[in-house]
Length: 144
Image (cartoon, rainbow, N blue to C red; front, side, top):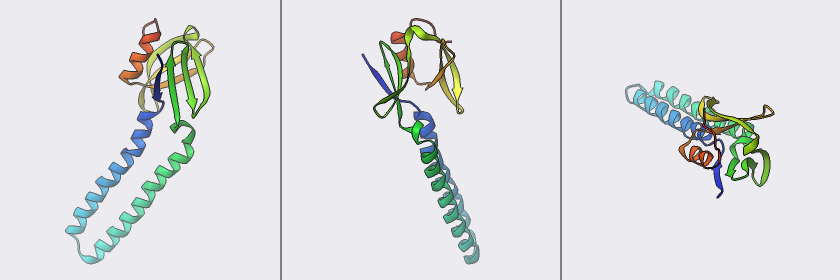
């Protein structure tokens, strides 16, 4: 059986959902301020809202450019081990017998599983129930 997951799902969701939600919240605040303001102040608030929108959406674009490589990675957990792939190319592969430990940890402020290879290399996977179940299917030791 082969399990396939998007590698950095939580990190991408926090950017692609979090930033638009922040923009929506600020837009609502600006709208409330415009209701109780005069015409000159409304013009300044609208101008500020446009600059804010440009800034927020350019930050999403910048994130996509800088983190393109990590956004489109996926993980395959199978009987032979854990592989990280970018499109159809395998980037990193840990065989089950070469894994020293799997620990609960954090990666970029998101909960993650830290997979430590015997040679010291480290791989982080999002801490999700489906990933935990897939790991427990093949990994005989306890997740620390």
